[in-house]
Image (tube, rainbow, N blue to C red; front, side, top):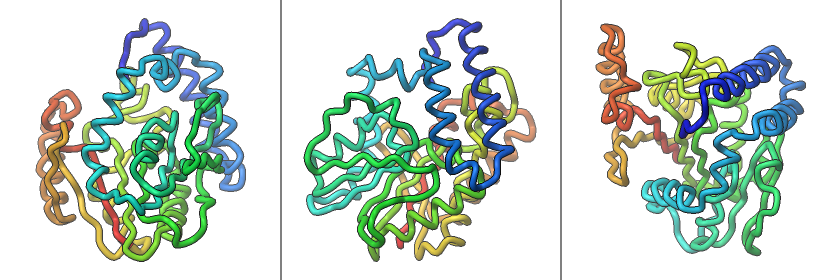
Length: 274
């Protein structure tokens, strides 16, 4: 997140997020279905300078972020694609995708960040409980999430992944991007802790995600490494070898999160095919 805030404001954000995340971690599965939406709405109300809110005021910054994400995503899109974004946030990416595909579903747990959204006819915003994917089974050609899996309770992450798999058409793909645990933590707690303690309820390596995708039933799982629009395809075995090497560096004290080329390599970009 861009940090143009004072340390006092960062700490206030950190303390609020830790408080709310603790409530999620302690909640039962049934309670979490209600709490995801409630607690994220509460976070945005109590932290009005949260980057996901203040970022909306900079059209240039939003456009640059969307353009960067489209460099990987565009290769999976066709004019007849039905697209699903899970954890759509301000929906900027989904709205861009809607310009080039047949239909777009944007799923999120909070309506706060999308107030006043001007959406085209082929776009539908769906408020979810943080786990369910309320679209017709077998209807999605390309599913996508960015900075989502780490926000879910591990039990809910597996359930949601199963729901995404069910929503995909045969041969459909799920492009899942999440910060890599090896270079974390990546939530606001990175300024204060060594392990994620805010709304990143669990951070993953790409290898851990590949294993989870296979366990849920994806027929093929691949990883992409790179950045700035240039990506290389790696098999799960190749990613496992790379992460094992980098984990060894971390154990001897190399701060992977502060070495920019390594951080770009470590971004977990996993693509599962149904």
